[in-house]
Image (tube, rainbow, N blue to C red):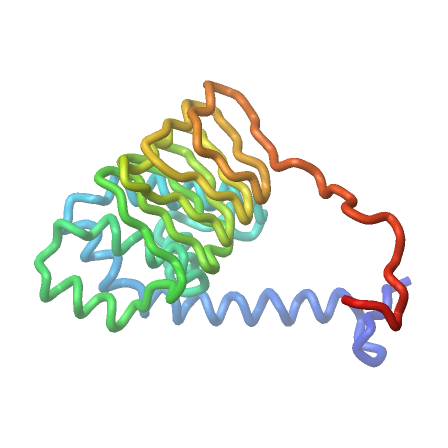
Length: 221
């Protein structure tokens, strides 16, 4: 028996087929639209690094339909669908002529609330969502993962350094001239002001009850 979807009595198989057809059409347009950006990456000399970025994003997203695409189709999909990826591509193009960079930023707009500022960002940086995220670091290694609402920034003494395979979860704050060594993980909403050793995971304290009794509804707030 064919399963029935929630939208009227349309079979789920039909809905899935329509969705695939729509994605195919959108991907065709994305391949055309993203081509100038792709060529700019090639001419900038950043192709090898961006290729690693693309492969890492596909592994992190881990969707079988996307994994089946060729590399340029993957790039076109990411550039068309995810402003966070476009922000990373603009970082990779920072050695391109200023006029070209301005033109590309106007056509391929980066994420409005994502800042990437580091002397070096290694290949394969995945930025999940990227909303309200500020990354200002000395350097970032390869195959790192940064979530949304993250602050990686400086104080009066300097900026953080991230090693390889570092993951920073949503809402985390990493401040000052500290090092997150290879394989370190910063949990959601954690505030980090000291070095984190290789392979070490640091997390925020759990919520603490300050008053277990409810205030009287007519009492003071």
